[in-house]
Image (cartoon, rainbow, N blue to C red; front, side, top):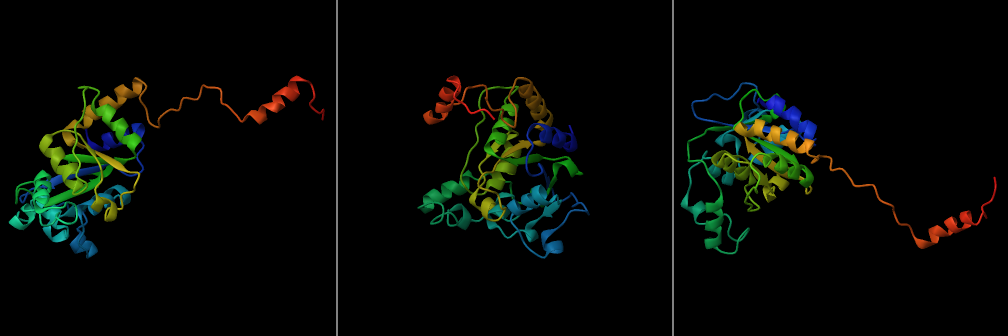
Length: 262
């Protein structure tokens, strides 16, 4: 399934407020598409990866970022654009901000999925419906009900439960790196930086999937839709409402024939 067809199906079943995002990692041998905007060259800024994703999902832009485009040290390391250092691994960046001790900080950094340094040189993101590349991963932002709906579609074939992990930081690693390395779906709790720099709203969550699972997810959404699991969530409205007792004095008046004639 191509990403354009996938987007149409997502819009039918999920109706997200922003575009689904297609993601591709480019090796040093792969060229950056000419049409892709480069933050440093074209916008004269450096950004975080969550900003690039936001530009794709909110503005419809195709963005390519490399080391020169990024000013988020955590993502430079996670995506392998800059080398891993002991200062990072020992927990200095997390200690005192996210965790109490260096030991806890080291555990937090170890929990962040990473690509080996130099494996990839650029990250390419675009609205999935307009992407001119085969995506390695896709990200869909939505409210909790929409993410739940995506989850039910993901489990249509296999059943069971989906396990995801959350740290409150570096969610771009979960959305992209963990998704690619595990070759599985992920429920995403947007991190602090995504909310500050990516403008992710308090009501938003996200859901990511490998590009190879597009057809499976669409089939699952169609199957669960047929089974009655749908978005918008249908409300159960076949019940008799209850009003304040004094409202029902009118019923007594009408029953006694005491109403005024026009």
